[in-house]
Length: 237
Image 1 (cartoon, rainbow, N blue to C red):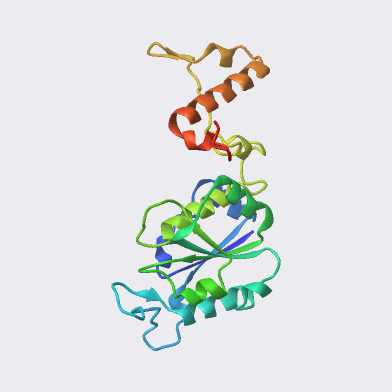
Image 2 (cartoon, helix red, strand yellow):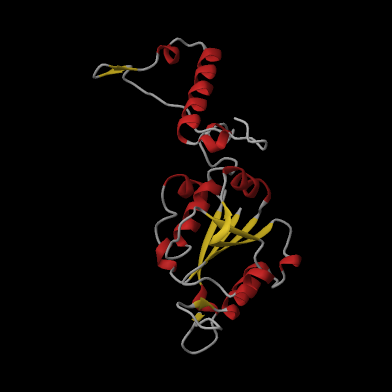
């Protein structure tokens, strides 16, 4: 997978992709990540990438011309209807669809090239969204100063789902949200610490019982913390 990140603060990403799973995935050529300064695509002598909104109001808006130039350069076209198969242009914005594990899995399975636009200020010129953006993604119901942290979160979520990125092919399958539930509790050595014991079921070697216990605990945790995940389309638990 190839990921291109468009931002006005490329230095934000100087080291953030150089740790852990992402670093290993880059080294193994599972993913290629490039960060681009939107200002490189501005054509005026001051390299302006923002301007005041028409109609007045507070704040600034990222301009249309540099973003069109950047995306046209990275995708080979300025028409989202003509993007190569597997190309997605994502705007990180509070107005976007909340990111879910299933969405990340869909991107990881189907996308070959993702261009991420880090919004700033009051957002981007709407013509960018209308003509170029295939997906608007939000990482939560709150407002950040810019899309850079959201892009970092999205990249991390995606990369760990790519084949070969994790040490085990089943690691991602057992994560929280993968089956609609939160993850179950986990323990490691020692079996007893300050009077707190690891549940006996995890020590008896009966894998069927262990899997049953894990599912029950995951259901219990989800019911306690995220009951909304258990509500079906008809409103039943």
